Length: 360
Image (cartoon, rainbow, N blue to C red; front, side, top):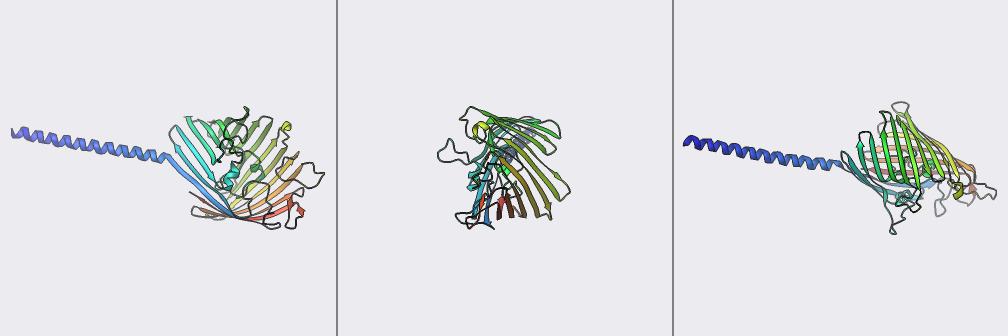
């Protein structure tokens, strides 16, 4: 009898221990699952502000600025707050990229079309990794053309180029990315017409393609009667010296009265230390048939064909997650398209920018 009792006691102890182990193991697995789920969610973004002053023109209500986008407001000015939420699953995920402030408003200039209260959507898309080599993206995404982007975090220069400013900023549609090999990639896309990022009021569509090879990209955008061909790439010439390159040609729809433009920009950048890099953007940009990128000449005989050579020297100092960017920019146009503080027209404009960009 005593033996039976002891045996039952041992069985009960073993059963209790097993149940306790199972409970702890299940809890641990649930906790790991929750942690894994949390790790798939991402939250990032940036905040930026700047000071801008012309060196050879007025800085009040008559302040001039280069014809390119962003960093065009005089005095102490706001950039934007950028908030990006995402979820990255094994097969599927999403990105919701929201912008607030003047730079964000400029980035989504063609919106709102649907909302009367405004729009803050920079990107909004879902994706599906169909296989290790095929990815589908559906929604609103930033353009695949050009060297520069909307976010000041990803650009070396704070002000933007003419090539970037007059290419499309974003598209809405469906794109497919194919990893053809370790070096080659291909992207194909069908999208709303350029800048129609909320819905399609025209019933017409644009088509895009990108062929990539080892960090060099050849891009094509066909949009109704217009098309753009763009090359974007760069080379590490040494451990501390990088050269970026962007070249593009745009042919506008003659029936809609849209002119043409073409240009090339070089981006040499030298890292002098772990926390400081100095870089130069030299850009030549030409337009025909009064495209409207550079400006309008007061000359009554002006035929709309003009060019600009812009040189931007930028320093980038990193302090933790904060980047300080002093910048000197010189724009020299073939026509008198700028106005000095005395109201006289001139072909050149020099300006200074000091920007602060915080990323998280």
